[in-house]
Image 1: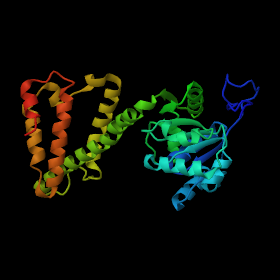
Image 2 (image 1 turned 120 degrees about the vertical axis):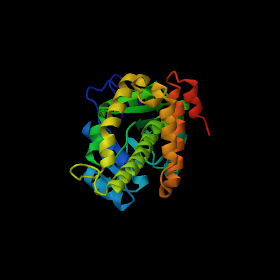
Image 3 (image 1 turned 60 degrees about the vertical axis):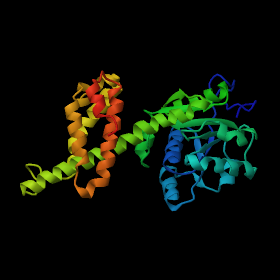
Length: 324
């Protein structure tokens, strides 16, 4: 820390000639915490200690942060200049309360959490004890490998802070990890997180549904032919995924570059008859897929109706997409 309690590594804030590095504590050693910890170490900071309660977390910490000690919460808090709270959103308020009650937090400690839907308000008990609260959320998914840290260098981070100094610190930390900081207002964190969940999580649901329906069509073709294979060479491994892969990959790239202009297909063309046929086919899947068929058909209808708002959909198409 600098002479006034401001982190001395921050360019333009301290008059110290040499940037100082921070001692980082990570709570806890999950996928996100270890990825960000490794990224901070790559920027020259030192992850001195981590909280890792489960066997899986301990193994992950040993693999990805091998020079860090595994300590209890109070000990990690006491020795950290930057405390990174990488815990599930629902667990964050409880962890904050535990830290506040521990009495181990030192004034001017940077406390950053990674919860997407929460700003710095959740850190108020720690700010009242002299901490500098930050919300730093990487907008990416984590799989628990070294690839996570590499992907951080191409990720945007939603950052929220209590004041301009906090924003400067948060932005500097993100830039050091190779990411791109994006300011999100305290009151808009839930909206920000909803957008990410809608785009990323529901995309997975959408693809899983499409795979299930395509597998039904493939299985039916195989059964009717009696040949036992849907391809010339007999390779049926992840066939639905292989069919969809190029199509959905191109669609994702196109929409990110073109927006709604990337739309193709029957809704974009206003083809009410084709959409009606799709809905009928989805609703008539075999009985053993009945529950899935109903929900997938309804999802198709709702998404089709939403898709139509980006087009000049004719009335007959809108009628097909209404609740029946």
